[in-house]
Image (cartoon, rainbow, N blue to C red; front, side, top):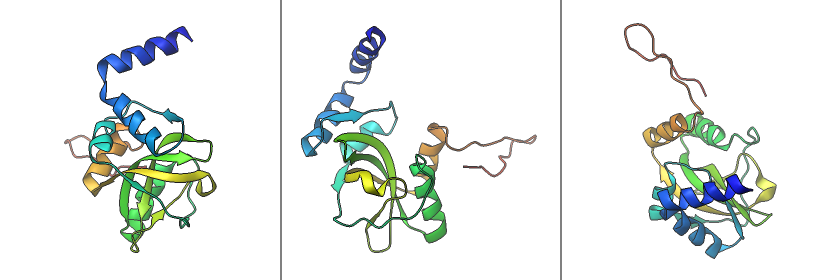
Length: 153
């Protein structure tokens, strides 16, 4: 518990903008934000918008691999890539990614039964790949000669 308080205090000192993101998300609903340190948080706060649908299309994907699932829908169908936070039915916000189909609908890939509200930003392909790389969800192997081999998710 003491370490938890130290981490919270230190995060607040280093990144006061994260408090603003938490306040903004909770103003839309919920009472908790599971906030990983993520280079995208400032941009999500500055540029993010809310999204919600009464009925959200679902594309089967691996549980807890939302970032990878959205990427796969993008590569298969050319759908848009979004990242941000999702409000779960437990009233907690979670870091999340989703696809946007050709009808401009959110396509959930991980937990369709547990999502109520989305808050986030659209990313282009390069930005999304960079995010995946920074999150450790893709790996690039540099071969002799300096050319990267194809990445794997």
